[in-house]
Image (cartoon, rainbow, N blue to C red; front, side):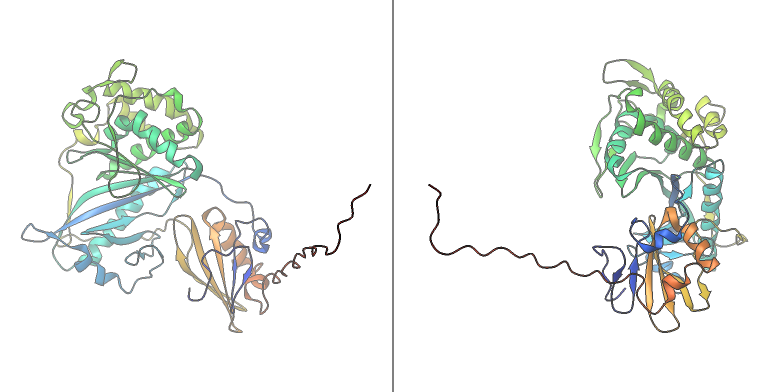
Length: 418
């Protein structure tokens, strides 16, 4: 946005032919036109995939995938390689690996299944884009993201590392896992782990969501484990190795012997049951589906490390159909009688709409995720046309307050009462 102020000091800032409006601020005129915000927490998944050529050597996704994404919409201001697909998810390159990113989806009964289906559809799109070149596509890592308020993100991340890391690792670390990354991010918590099979996305996300909700209210319900928590290397956060509790979690699995900070001994299975028993009511209160997590915790469904070799997908010899479903917020451009609106950029938290009038002026509406659905509905209904497409500013420029005058010091004799 050339010439714009990225962080205006006030709502309705008037610039050269545009107005930046922030419906998150109560004084902004746009907020008065929108329905109440959707304050439900959200979850999202990022899956990284390694490309392997016919000779068995890793291939750089930036070389083989990056150029093929050039014609797709680039909407992420923080990642110039990221593109948005028609289904609502994104593809990008993270170093040598290709990365599939779901949009954040509200917590509810279908959150896990929706995320799983979206990951599969995005991976299928990746395979179609790479074809007809021959590559094997192998799962490399997964990052689970759930909503956490900024003021609590660091504390919750630290508590997960100290109190729940083994339980989370049991559901997320496969045979090639090497530890858990717990990172506080802006408005969310990110947990990096081994690549998750599709079947494990729902139970892992549900457990993490319940744990995060629990730790924001009653962290003391879970005892601190005697685990070695280290600082994460690349970004701020915490790292817990799979041997940080004293035993090899991949080899011993549910039978790994753990110790609490007070000296009590328990198995990893007992710890998993303890964590899920405390977190389950919070997951249930948010309407999340519980059956798949119940099955993994009880042992009727195997853990990620108890399964066979992770799957490998190929770009040749397999017909991959395109999904017709869409996930996330509606980012389609709009045409109104007085102008048009299209998305300039989109992030986890906000979406910026460029609203250009037929008279040649433009405004940017920076819309928080919680108000996006209401913004689109009001835009389609025409109730925002006068605000976004009129020739004048959406709010009158603020007048500068009058200069403060300081009384000049008196000159002359100083009178003292006798």
